[in-house]
Image (cartoon, rainbow, N blue to C red):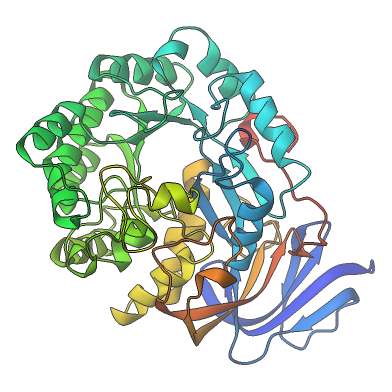
Amino acid sequence: MLDARRHDLVVRARRALVDGGWREASVVVRDGRVVAIGGLADEVDATVDVTLPDDQVLLPGVVDSHVHVNEPGRTEWEGFATATRAAAAGGVTTIVDMPLNSIPPTTSVDALDQKRAAAGPQSVVDVGFWGGAIPANLGTGDLRALHEAGVFGFKAFLSPSGVDEFPHLSTEQLHVAMAELADFDGLLIVHAEDPERLDAASAAAPAGGAAYDAFVRSRPDVVELTAIEHVVEALRATGGRAHVLHLSSATALDTIRAAKADGLRLTVETCPHYLTFDAEHIGDGATQFKCCPPIRGEANRELLWQGLVDGTIDVVASDHSPSTRALKFAGGSDAGHGDFDVAWGGISGLELSFRAVWTGARQRGIALETVVGWMSRGTAALVGLPTKGRIGVGADADLVAFAPETPVTVDVDDLSHRNPVTAYDDARLIGEVAATWVGGRLAGPSAPPARLLVRPDTGLAS
């Protein structure tokens, strides 16, 4: 029963996804939290009273656990102002920022403080932070200090990252890092490509230049599979926790299934671009599609969808990894004329990630609430944010009004991230984000800054 105090917001919808199930509802908000859920026509004393039209549903905000914001240091690639506006436009109410490609990378508490100082005044969605595990901070106390400062886990590369300030871990160092994190039950999140297999593939394949097929052959499935096998071996040796990032190769699914069946604490994500695109339809020179590991063939894509449906893959996150147009189309004149050997590898898709996955899911008969499970509740659970990713009493009032049957044709010039380049340009998607509330406040340029998040178990205030 509602108390007599005036509430900040009530959102009414004929279809609201409340604690995983659809119902008519009025969602009542005060002080950033959902305080009551009632019937559609319940009387509520609220400053703002919104009723969604019948073609819109009310969803919990997306929690994107894999975003490269790049600020400070490479803000010309992206920044907290543009990234968080893009997030809100796509129904994303929480992002967790990767420790690279910022300068300095988030491998010490001092660097984390610089990240938080940059993010705090500019961010219109809630922001958390991953730390980084690199050779230089193993055994120094930096990992534990970052954990105590509230990072959600630690990113490591098993092959070169593409930026000098964030070197990769050897297989031996992977075991060292996993053992160190196991002492305080920290989570290691892993870019899983094996450098020896990469070197062998590069030696066997000619330089690709503009040829997409040559680029894929330079990073074959065995590169991912071998690295994931190393992660599983480290889990067996240490009893730690690990999360495999941006799985692109379905050849690793059996290894992942076996590890989970053995009780190892392993989770896995894939990304919207691996579920949307396929190698057969990527033209030579189309370096807007370059990412590492690469987008593979259509049959592989369908196996990734199956892995999601059967639970082998746990979550979907954007891996928004933007750059300038000059870097993205390096070696060529412009879109469609890049060189895959030298162009920056990363997909700009934060604003479109939820709609891209919903479009593919809908085509395959997968329910909208299942997609929400992968991209909201599941990602919130991955990072340990129990008040995120769901609509329920006590949850954060992170809400999205979404029109699930509205067709949209993507125009890169209409997107909110900093540089006008994306693999999704001219894509036909289904679904339109009509409004996004973060902590009960309508997200937008005039909204006050959102919260900087820490792991709840730290006892630190967000």
